[in-house]
Image 1 (tube, rainbow, N blue to C red):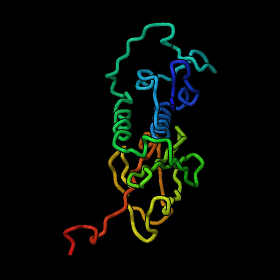
Image 2: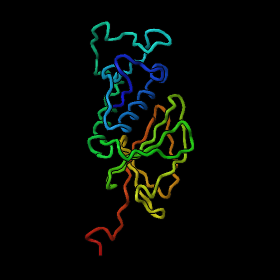
Image 3: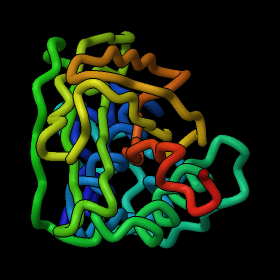
Image 4: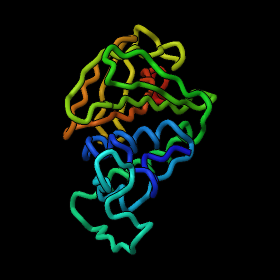
Length: 202
């Protein structure tokens, strides 16, 4: 199981990175591991204040008091968490710890990796910006052979977080992520169907 936070551990990156780091860590957990969890209300509401500098204890820890959480706050991460859980339910590639592969990208603050089902019918390619303070862009090396893609044919990647769709071609493709706009892409990779593959063609 991957946990971006726990009732006992408020990682330093969450203390310093604000909302972008909360987004990055939960996307990593939800797409890298078949099982993940969060210390829910504190994560949803971006609790990032430590008990004291250098501590991983929460300032207002539920270990020592009863908390009442306002989960209806407008800046809650609930929409992102809901979307991630829906993506996980819809994509069997994310429901297994097998066939996880990391891919080259020429910016060290960008992490790129994929998961796919054994038959290759479901491919999810994720790119996460690990820097909560600055945007980063890089050229991603897409493993065409692994994904069963033709180097000469375009293919489709749909960002499951935003529903935006892009056409890529070849192994090298540009990715740009900026805090406050997009901290991660979670792409469904799809081969484009040719006219000859449609029953009505001809």
